[in-house]
Length: 175
Image (cartoon, rainbow, N blue to C red):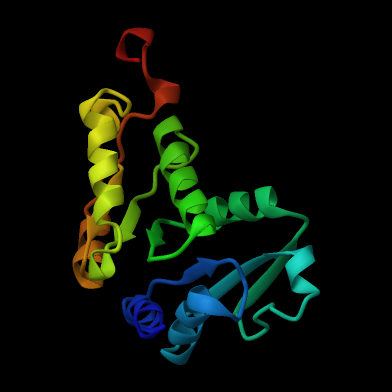
């Protein structure tokens, strides 16, 4: 929880707003609180089913209620200039892989960052490298995922990110 609050505050201190799932609980609620406490902008995007169950964070700068998860993730992409993943569970992995997949395809050209706090994602980083080494990630897409164990370093790397050639713009021989 402390790391999550620090991430929110660190983003706010750099003038980076937070777009997230709109809840007040858990790690992402702590990210939002950290950002808000540091004077940052926080935009929540929450599905109707969760908004009505008293988990919505009404302290957000903006809170958008959407019909479901697909619309929520589309709004994440539309409202964001980049994606940062902190340790989490299945929903976190779903959002990370979707951000990477959509970048690969060309639905967005934003950096995808992974904060490898406490070595939490060591095996995932190794797995991503393994997918690349056996040919399941094209050379043009091997640098989509940016990982660091330090938020300042991760943000610096993300700021230097150069978009790759997405699949939608590749020729058949490149695929």
